[in-house]
Image (cartoon, rainbow, N blue to C red; front, side, top):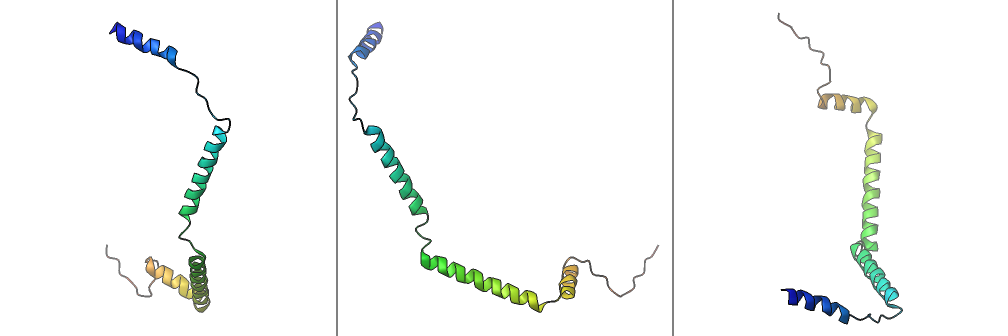
Length: 99
């Protein structure tokens, strides 16, 4: 066991300095940047201008329909509808309370 440990420690002496290109860091950083740009572009490739236009048209049509519907109904109708849906409306019928 001691021989293996000694051989391992002696092998450390044979390690030499690594020769690296002076532009290694710039090359790696450039590859990282281009890879991240490709990923960002891939996320939005499906949202084409045609789809953007169709989405815009749908939103405008829905807004126009909502605006027209808002103009047709009156405030009293809206309040009565709200009160009926939540059981807050008062009825004109009299009720008998028994003791």
